[in-house]
Length: 292
Image 1 (cartoon, rainbow, N blue to C red):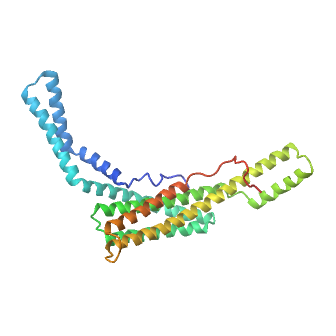
Image 2: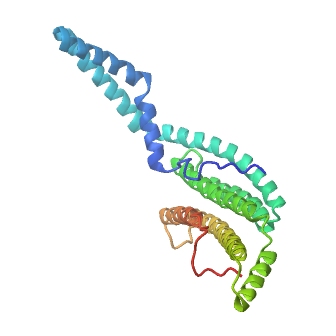
Image 3: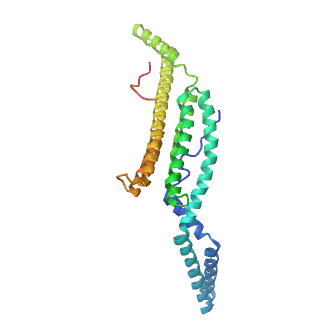
């Protein structure tokens, strides 16, 4: 099974701040910004080194002014276009990752006999597609808001896949532990311990068995928590879609902006919960844990 870790859901940053940084970077690197700036820099250097006269001073000032003007026009008037381009590139990368991960996860979870996880692979894909279709119906695809909403939904979808990836790793790690057998052996040693002092080798066996049981139990609990988090994510996608539909519902008590904010907040909460659930819970040393 191929379970090499991929970048987390936040690696593809769909936030508006990240899109603005991308737009800023691209407009600064545009030739009509860089070339005049370079000419102005050369002229300024020549003026400083050789006292080249007023011509160099004019060239320096003009170069910087032209570069600044070009950047201002492109960023403040055309910034949204650059931001949409940024989101489009992220979406293309997301689609590639989605296809690769979902197919591999479905295969891995089937081998590990995790039926709920298998089902969630399909449900996450279906809920995501439905949600995007809702956004497409209530927003214009040319709007930056549409790109932000879809980007946030994509982050949520990836968070769900990351949960499933973690589940695969946890199940693989404990797949060879027969919890019932381990529990029986622990019980046998502990009963013997009540009647006599265990030999050193028996003490070591008992300690090792308890650690195996602890790892298995913690892994099982974490798997259950991650599956529950994904169920919450699926419900949040439904809620976000319902909130988005109210954007064009004239009978709604909320304004379109309030409905948009509600939908986006539901998606952001879903992502935050998913990230929190993936905090590793396994430790080999937890006094007082139940191990039989």
